[in-house]
Image (cartoon, rainbow, N blue to C red):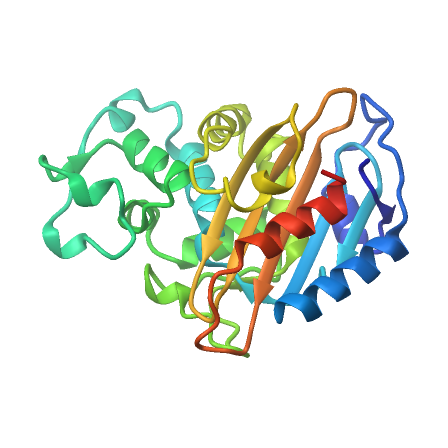
Length: 290
């Protein structure tokens, strides 16, 4: 069962498309979900932020929704969305390979570190960045956009004023407690992902291409997808960084239910904290009901 409380901030409400939803989303018990998330935080020794918004309504559930968390690779959805918005109908651009060198390779680049050609088209970069969270591909897309500040500006254009990208991969994943660089809030991430994937805020082509790539994401099997019971479709993007940070955000479609945008973000104050994918999976179960 989907579960929501009344939306408490005008900003998130403004990001939801006006008009009735195609299906009436059931309303659960927000107090129960809040208690369950608090218990999960204690059990996992991790701070968790969640925002879930039912598309086409003012129904949402928020837990630490306005708090800052390290964004990590969640920025890649914005980067690709901004690139498609600006160059989407330029077929020559999308079919022209972009060269790069060994010096451009950074850690966690599971696609581009296998290159034999040292070049990739923008479409190949987007696929690598979104489906495999390839960090070199993310940097090359950032380079096409003019750098990290372009992501901050793009987020502001979508109404997300608490999102900032300051650095490149992999430094943007440092996740140092209290450092506001390269951070966002669950409210902002939900607003951005809903705008891009459902509301065509960057154009119909951007929404279509983002959904095509993100519906085939290969990095969330142990996170949000592990907390869901078929049948469902999920277009999502994961992120991970130092201090054990793990994130997952996207749009969930289930039969006879309105689409649900979910942003789950975490942080810790322990440099030696390990990735806790199960915390994301369990938070998904709590909010969505499996």
